[in-house]
Image (cartoon, rainbow, N blue to C red; front, side, top):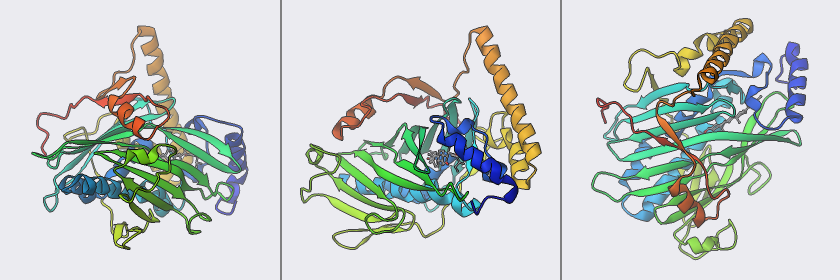
Length: 389
Ligand code: 0T9
């Protein structure tokens, strides 16, 4: 690979061989230093709100149709950050730090132009396999996203295929307004460019936004499909669930909106040519805080926990990074041993795990999702009493 430093070529090749013969949890494999990211996966949920004005704008939509399009617009506008931002900031996709059980990440986006403050809370609810639970809430507007994420990976013709496990529920309940709940499913990823040591994500197949009387079915294509361009999507938003009677591709009824374009750039309404989304403008990174209401960062807060490892990776002192990482891993092993001996388990701080989610089950039926039942991590609603909207 061209992007692989000469001294790491051998270890990159053996890393690729180990992924090829491996299926499941890639996060535990040791990768060569050049591909390591100093950022933990617990920080990723912040990508959902790097355009806080679009999140807030969902509450301002007047009709059910406009609301569902506002949800889709916000969702599509998060994809650039979710799937291309490491390439922009670090030159390629990188292997994130593998969060420990109970790792925490807190932050917010400040109020601006009356859009309200948006809060973020993330908790790592499983280490092996990694599962991240999060809540993002704008109380002023009455918009809340609760979800969890895990990944199932496999290797196929030189690429890593990632199926995202988990979903998110977006609740829209503006003061004095109608309440809607939307199920958001997550796209499949293909990680290409591995051979050259410069991995990047392409999205594949489809995902849904279902709720508020509407269904958006989003289809993703990469280079060589619809238009020969990378990062292409086409979404169909329709009130007619019967349109999905026989397949995941809706049958046109004349009441649908079709939007298409490139998710990392812009898109248009197919019929009118009117702009639908545009992410050329700047994004707003989350303001990281210690604890839910700010203050000193606790032991398990991401930026505190990983600070020495992240410093080593950023400064190219990989020996220090790996030494510090071992300290964290040994401490974790000891904690699990102690818990086992005491017959206890690590208590979650903000979530309750439930075997099923009635909202998921109901909305999953509309587009015949598999699996029909998924577990959820229910937010305990334990924002501090002083929590200010
Ligand atoms: C949820 C997102 C997810 C997390 C990452 C697959 C991946 C871990 C999960 C799905 C976010 O909302 C969106 C974006 C990127 C996804 C990551 C891309 C990636 O490569 C990693 C996996 C675990 C690896 O690190 C593979 C090995 C590496 C050498 C390739 C860069």
